[in-house]
Image (cartoon, rainbow, N blue to C red):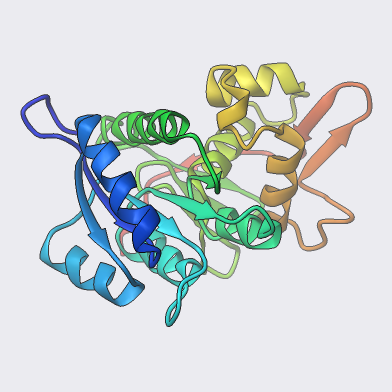
Amino acid sequence: MNDQQAPDRILLVDDEKDLREPLGAYLEKQGLAVRQADSAAAARTMLREQPADLVLLDIMMPGEDGLSLCRHLVETQKTPVILLTARGEATDRIVGLEIGADDYVVKPFEPRELVARIRSVLRRATRAEAAPTIEQDYVFENWRLDPLKRRLTDPEGAVVAISSAEYRLLRAFLDHPRQVLDRDRLLDMVQGREAHLFDRSVDNAISRLRRKVEEDRTDPRLILTVRGGGYMLAADVSRADPVVA
């Protein structure tokens, strides 16, 4: 997100000192500017003092947990979040991605993999910031997607939190309405075939997106599965000027 004279600012939030401090030191050696917080409350204070370019966030912490803080960051600051999760926390990982986390890493993890994921998320955030300053919203079935703010609103006007991966997937469908998109093409369009960073599965990402936009995800009406082909957005899409808040 920054030039070479300004290293990317990482906030590492984990109550386990034995993991947090060595990991912070490793990330510093990789050229990242790292601050450390041992709780969600401490992280909130640090972020008020100085924003971060990315937050590494443990899910299981005493007091306010990581999922609550993640929701706050996504809804109020648009800060990219990578979750640090225990191997048995599959449900929490899914919830974290649904509320807008950009990625997750399962403990114990290889630090080099974590650095690769950090840089990937930061690159995507940089590309998003470089988007045109004026771009029309997508409107479909009374839903609205603001591509500049990456804000999805439902037919009643309520904001629905979506992760970066879900945004890119929805954008692919909105750019190609009523067209069958197979998995390989979706990977090309959404993640440049870096499938391991796109939550490893297009099908899982489709399932998460359906939870957001379908009245009944077991009987989808918007994002259809095409047998032997892939997926299709079964809706007409129009463009409209952004709504002035």
